[in-house]
View 1 (cartoon, rainbow, N blue to C red):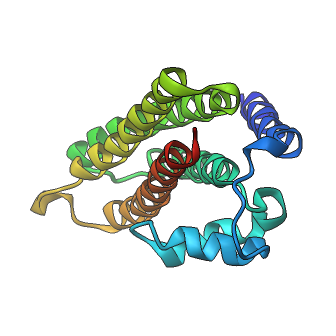
View 2: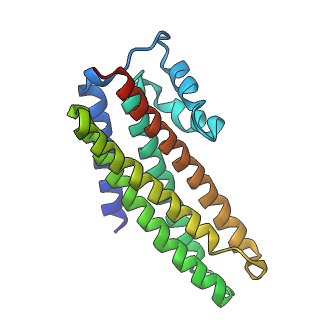
Amino acid sequence: MAGKVGFSLLLLMNLVIHMATTAQSSITRHPDPNPSNFIKSSCRSTRYPVLCVQSLLGYATLIRRSDRQLAMTALSVSISKTRSSASFVRKMSKGRGMKHRQYIAVQDCIENIADSVDRLKQSVRELGRTREAAGDDFTWHVNNVQTWVSAALTDDNTCLDGFSGSGMNGKVKGAIMDRVVHVAQVTSNALALVNRFASRHRTTSP
């Protein structure tokens, strides 16, 4: 199973890289030619700009100055982070001494995070389809992306809600919440960059 997951993620990242190297027409021209500065400037539109820069600066040569590629990479990073958190939560679920209520919350969280990964994967594929789309077709694809990323973010928050209440204190709750909060913030940033791409594309389109 781990091999299949790794292979699927490799294919997804290859798709992202392929789109970055072939879609020259998708690059929005900006006054500053420095990709790092482009990322820093773009991340100001997100809710967690410092985390945004930290997550994406290592992909500067891939992103270059493309608003689409920036959003695509942000979604791919979110998938990677979410999968890592899913693996962590599954390991936590096997720990001993867990209260029944905590066990149920952990199992629900695992399901929610799995759903989040699926929605993010859908969003990456759909965002790729905007490369040759225009007008209403572009809007339809982008709306799908925004809907799926929003749903992924809801899945993350639903996981967190399961650990609310005084009876859910402890190391399990703290460890899982730290991971999922981080994932939710990364996904929130990705959604903001998708929205930014959509807005700038509509502004520059004839």
